[in-house]
Length: 291
Image (cartoon, helix red, strand yellow):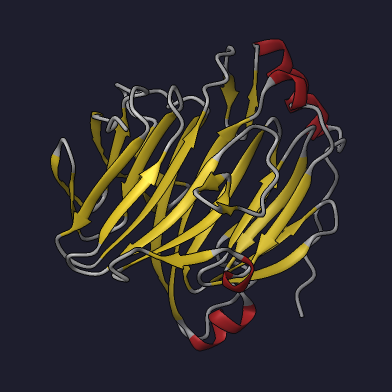
């Protein structure tokens, strides 16, 4: 099997998102998207003990036309939305929200985390939806660590977590509007990894920390995203030190993309309609209940 080569290495620079500093390897001035992956935000910040959970995190805001997918590495995340979903997901879990025709949601640390204090670390990836499904009914899926298929590498120094798609004999529990392979990989020092990615799919490997040596390329350090060539069907390597990574891969949608803030559509007219629908309350209203 041919090994996929690294097309480009993209560093996750800090950007300001409404007063919150996040790491963002895509989009950049050079790379607008890795179709269908539109954005990756890596957030790690301390939650002060005794924080007011009413004002922590990100308050109500709308989405339409894509899937914000969040991987929780540390702490937890409390999701509420205008469709009535209300769920806290702990470390090791993930939430997959297909916004479809539109909804309003909030993302905050839980009341318990605000009371006790601690670290919160998440990665959120925006995954585009094909035109045929952009106005579908929204859905929300939350998974704890115990809900996710987990298995070790042959040397038992690497652990794989599969959220969506297939990897060998394993299948992820998410049924997404567009085929997506999404995985977390935790490797100890010298831990080896080998992954299968379908030919012609766009794919990337993002390192939260640590270092890996990737076959056919060499050293990749933490906070870098390795965008892979479509040619080839495997990637393999080993960790030079304890390393956490995510892998995402998908066939490109190859459709026009028009964005404005939290709306991802195919043309400007659709974006303007999304703005009007939100202003008119057609995406629902989220009134957060705090005790």
